[in-house]
Image (tube, rainbow, N blue to C red; front, side):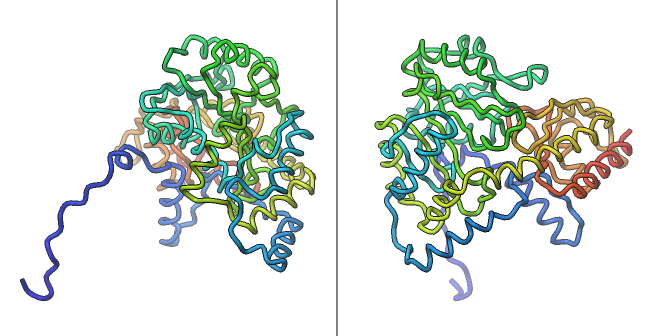
Length: 408
């Protein structure tokens, strides 16, 4: 064999586990937008769920102080005791929930907290009821655990919210877990106290079922009251509440999330985390303590901006033919049904048959990045992030209006 020739290699065989998983579509669209921008195209990306605000200065200052004080060593797997206590204090203050530090596990982002819980509770073949539209990673986490996702779909007319009656009808002996978010990514829907009371009544009748309540957008709420399912005493031990610092405190890059659950579930999540990542970054944890101790003033300022942007975008899209949307009650997304555009053709003769087609067309023609709703369990929809400056939102939706007007 010539010295320059590469040796023969056996075919690479990846695990069935990884082959079954899909790449996050929000990340995939962000990659496409970045690639286009790298070519010099002026792309407005509304694809990523990230606040456009800087982390508040007092939180940054706490991180600097932590460095100066030598917090550079490994941390306890479930988080610093002071942070877990601060999280307990937060639950008591904001949610009227009593937890002990032993009920809290701090993770590298809320995504890891979700994955820890799914892997702790779901066996191969177990059914997981997933409220749809759902965040893109829910279904993939269930697949990783070799469970079976059972989507329950909320209608646009009901603000995309799944009803307690739907849940009751879907429960089988194989049902192990329910997953939902409120405020919801991608729809912005917020479950009311009455709606969660009805859900709690169903869950209480099935003590073998647990619920993953994703509350990462808790502070970005335009209706006033945030209700946690765990507030209903009859199901508190069945509920795992997920939260974190990325959205309410604009701390996406810090990667700190947490869960609250009965002691046995928290211990199981700690065990998994101990073998995968161990404890979360020491500096980020110290900053998170400061975030909680600093209250909600910075979050409330951001929410005022998000509310204004929501209202702006609703005004901008109301006259776009083929778009139908709910009025988001929280989070920072617009999730219109765009099926009214399907069947139309581009100037080059390509038919817009799906939301994925429309997302690609808008990226290439309008240079606006959105995410195909199929990734969220809603193939007739697109998700637009409204976490962008007002002028960017105006420009983006004007470009969309002009591009759609070109379709035949």
